[in-house]
Amino acid sequence: MACMLDAVAVTRALGAAGCVAADEEAVELIRRAHDDDELERMLARRLTGEPLAWVTGGVSFCGLDVIVEPGVYVPRWQSEPLALMAARLLPPAGVGVDLCTGAGAIAMVMQSAHPDARIVATEIDSVAASCARLNGLVVYEGHLDEPLPAELESQVDVITGVLPYVPNDALHFLPRDVQRFEAPRALDGGEGGVELISAVVRTGPRWSKRGGWLLLEVGGEQVIGVTAMLAASGYRDVDVLEDEDGDPRGICGRLDR
Image (cartoon, rainbow, N blue to C red; front, top):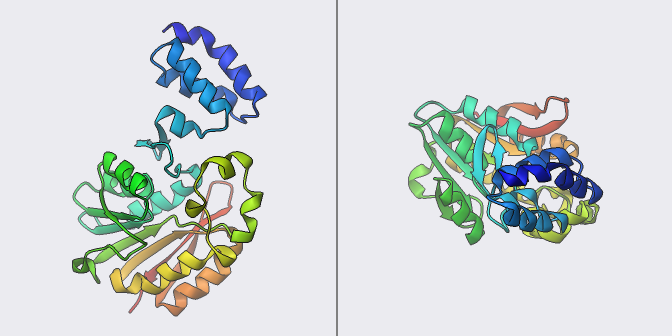
């Protein structure tokens, strides 16, 4: 394609704008653009700080192509350890629930690993819910577990949630582009960053079967507190999920009552 000739210029423009992985982003923009005019438009959007996934229409997550429409929380690579662990814990024909699914990346990984499993998701934002449906998911619209059908009570093998966990008094520390473009509701975890996490831990036993797993993304400073919450709700075998650098990215526990 003719736009391949612009690779060096695209990389330079992205680098000058402060993009850390300018060369990788240039490759992605060029791969997605159908012609030079579209490439120019996409580059202009990215240079404003708009998330790359919104510009290109998607992101790769655990090897899957996830559609991400503008306005929808962008799946991060930091969530991949949680998604892969969920897929390992889910029985081949089990039941998996992904809360606050966003574009649906976590649920997609579980469904891809286990085509015969029943995977459902919840999402309060209608735009994100529509996006997740474009990714082939069954989505119930509403807050956390509230829209789940009663038939799933005590039937779920794996519950996952990448819930907002940034403390509300730390939101101003987020990168400027994140603050400018991404919805606060997708980031704000309330006081201490654990308001939604604690709600899910409390209601998890309603949905988990005995021996079922709950996996949540948390910040490193929240691990001790969330571990105590899980224990108080009857979850045992609590383990911290780490990335390849050894940094905590999530926590999981198995219901034992």
